[in-house]
Each structure stands twice: as C-alpha cells, then as structure tokens.
Image (cartoon, rainbow, N blue to C red; front, side, top):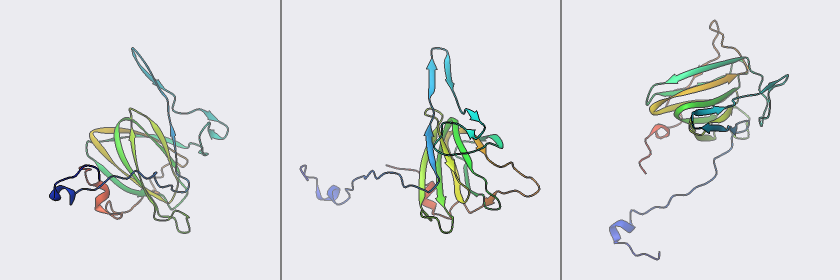
Length: 179
C-alpha cells in the first residue's frame, strides 16, 4: 500500500471487485434507444415479423403484452413458469427495478447461477427470461412501470405462475447496498 493508514482503518479496509455479470443460459439483454428532443422522447419497443420480434438476440413470438406498476420499495419475488413453457421479455419504461434471476432448471449448465440486473426507464433495456428461471424484483423509492411480453397467454383457470419464497436464495439479495 502506498498510503499508510492508521491501524484501525487499515484493518477494516477492503477493495471492490468488478467481475462480469454471470451468464445464465438463455438470458440475454438488448438495450433500446431512447430518442430525446426538446419536447419529449420516443423509443421503439419492438418490430414484429412472421417470426415474432425482429432484431433481437433470441426468438420470441408474442402472445400477450402486459404492464405492471410497482409501488415504491415493493418486492415481488420469486415467480417461475414450469407447467408449460412461458418465456418473457421485460422492459422498465419508468422508474427503476432491481431484478434477480436464478436458474432453477435441472440439467442446465448454469443451474443455481444468480444474476442481478438494474432495469431503468432512463436507459431502457429488454431482458429475456426463459422458462425455469426464477425471477423477481424490488422497485426503487419512486416505484416503476414494467412492460413485459410473454410467448404464452395467462390462463386464469390454471395459472402457470409458480411461486418460490422471496428469500429462498438469500435475504441478502434484497438488502440495501450500503456502500
């Protein structure tokens, strides 16, 4: 160390590391372009073709598009789709969500991998969440608006919305980052 610290501070010193985000098989992100002008902004969410969304890193044929409004601080976790295949694309269009993804698929090369994403309306990004990957979020202090697209329709008679306890993968996931 080039700068000598008093022993009580040197003993408490740690350094951050910045490893790349862990990959989860089938999860991809795609940044969107928000075009600003003096009187607002415009963003193209999706172009559709015969094979579904065009120009994305993976394939998804939309069957339902929904919007969810998250109250400030709301934790909505964990959901998982296992009865039938239901892949999703999420995009925050207002506010901010801290999103956790956990691969729960038996036989997956990334089984057990946890990945944190911060999705924001300031810098909109799509994230693809494949079936069998548990997903949940915590809204920021200002709440958030989530636009999400699914390749399966919601069936109220037999919901494909499995639940895993919010703290199944560790209470610390939802702890405030204190620096």
